[in-house]
Picture (cartoon, rainbow over the protein chains, first blue to last red):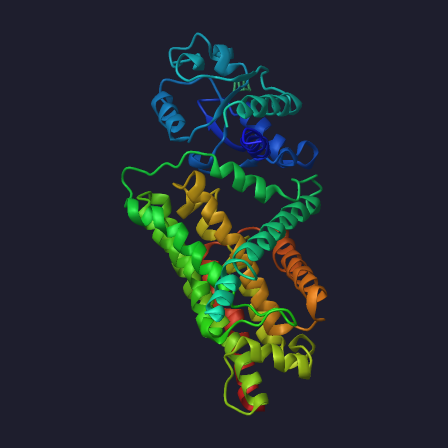
Length: 147
Length: 319
Ligand code: SF4
């Protein structure tokens, strides 16, 4: 009985993942895809309880787009530290995985997983909204093991 | 002794505390769901605000290094407890009559200003520039709406006071009694200016579009709430849920308190709150964009103020 209550609470908690977007030097393609996923009625993520938040301190699931350029590296790492635990990271697009079309550029510090732990990768350039929603659903499953 | 216990019960359990919190969270859930439907989305489950609170209670609390930690930590608790106290002051026709020791209309009006003050404190104590911007915006919008609303409250108080044979009546119970005998004010065209003023006050006081300027997440990243995380953010969410019930309940008390006694009256109160929230908050917020702070300031000092003065003049002329 006593062990059941925390697990029930953590199950209920996973119904409320708040999303935070970090643009680590993306070409904006992935960001547009993220915006449509959230906002247009067709792919409404609010039915999973998700909600975009403006502050990193409110975030549960972090969506990072872009190849991590040298210029934003420190800022992204600092933002990542500002997010309270337990948190889950989702890398959206091929850019964070390999650098994508920017991979041999002098301006790139990535791949991203050398600096922060990535839980879910959503490949695609840009990924389809369905893929992003699937990525968020997988992130929620990972999150349940932590909260 | 037993009087004290009853008072404590009314503040902590019904209709303050637990009851107000549950009703407020339910109203917030209905609000989010209806808003989603109006935008042709599916929307979150009805209990979403409860899930949010459970989630927040399990997150880590971070206190920024550059903040004044004591104020930062205690501000949300102060705001929440004031709202719980205010919720115990709202009469429910045929069910609950607040004891006079809790205070009158003016006390309630001042308690209603506490959440805004707490947000200002929190914003300035958090040490973040966005919090400071939120602080200054919260202050200007509060200065703009307090005046007109006070005029609307005074018109109701004078109307009831004159009807009862003294100059002014600030007791909420008396306002409800008067409308029980003479019919609700919503049916009296002379009261409509005051009612319109009060309707403009809803979105501004509850901080939703088009007046969510202090917390605009696309401009100042939720302003005063920016640095809050975990349980203390949850306390702010609870404060705003209870405040929702207080403000809606005040509107119902002032203009349409009538209804049956007992359980039915309680249900009717909840239904009235929800309908008012949907019409006065959800529809407005899905149908409008955000105003700039100077536009909002000018708006309140134009229409609601004119209506407030007009309704006060009508009441004085008719008495
Ligand atoms: S994955 Fe493609 S669309 Fe996304 S940021 Fe990189 S280049 Fe742009």
